[in-house]
Amino acid sequence: MIETGESERDEIVSYEDEALILVDDQDRELGHLSKLKCHEGDGVLHRAFSLFVFNGRGELLLQQRAAGKRLWPLFWSNSCCSHPRRGERMTEAVHRRLWQELGIEAELDYLYKFRYQARYDASGAEHELCSVYLGVSDEAPRPNRQEIADWRWIPPAKLDAELVSRAEHYTPWFKMEWRRLRSEFADEIKTYTR
Image 1: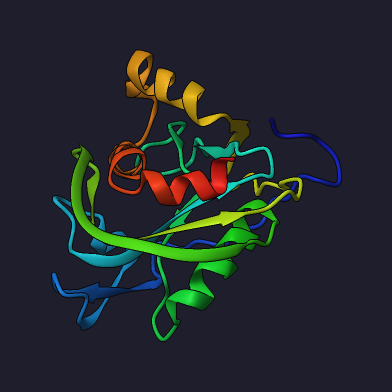
Image 2: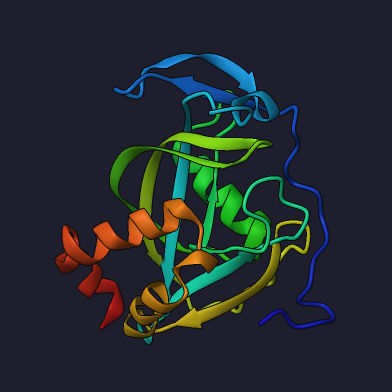
């Protein structure tokens, strides 16, 4: 839950004209295109990442996307997701964005990469080659209001139940990633949820 006062931040950290990295299916860099253009129509394949941050109790940090988001506003999603910028290494990008959105730090471990495409509406779509990372942090989130409407910690079993009963409240990439984490990477997840 977002707390008021000093823990709340309000900083613009994402711009429609920032250059994202265009890639092919093998993650070879092809060039650059603005964030706005990358998400128009059916989307243009670009490099992205998704972070899953757990606390010491094994709960996953979820965020509700800000109302001002162009795609999937107010939908619940994984702890943090975004794109590396032109000239930025992925390892730099994941830590930068975790700090910008949630005001926390975490050790992050790369797990896997996948391609997906999801249409929101006539305004655009996601088309990403997305690297998925897992991490742990017991820091209290200090959410950026420009990016996050709300947040919460949730036990994996409760999340599984919500994804059955309220699936329409979650982003499509998060549902794909979580399903794969709970099946193909179940052993790796146990390390974070014990």
